[in-house]
Length: 221
Image 1 (cartoon, rainbow, N blue to C red):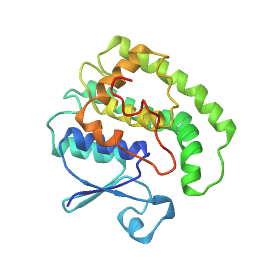
Image 2: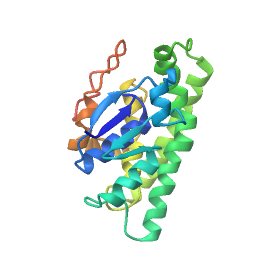
Image 3: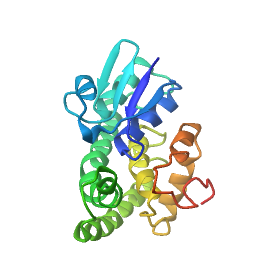
Image 4: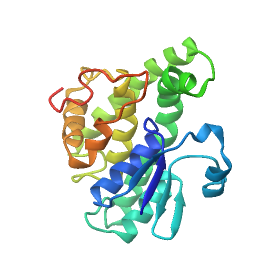
């Protein structure tokens, strides 16, 4: 049985889940309290991070590495362009969201509002929350600029760049921290990717004590 050890509101886990869904690879989802650093989990990934994918006889970690492995071993439907320039742009945008967006926004909003309480790490730091709420506007504007020139973030077809961005934004949408009125272009893009079959399990996520807003699972939000 293929298994994905994950945390429901981890954008990196959601990135892998969406990729698996697009590739139509079935896995059993195993909720992992990775912050407890249990011995079994550390044997699976000594880095102590999720996601960890158990696929056939392999144990894979690090979301970008996992997704590119899945792309190479299951090339249909493609999530990476065939040409080097296209692959570069997808990887650049994946890094943008996994590094810059995560550092400036996800970690400041999601981790402060949800993760701290779930992990027993205290109360939200209002300075971080304010910073994240300010910086997300810049990122939404950048996405809008990209989408004004392209059908999808990295070009004319959906790629891993769109999956990565949607993984982060879906976590923030769960806590109502995305102003979808800021850009009609970004909202239309998200509605398009949110309607894909691979997104269904994401929209069904529930974190005990933190119910999602009514619009979260609404495809016509």
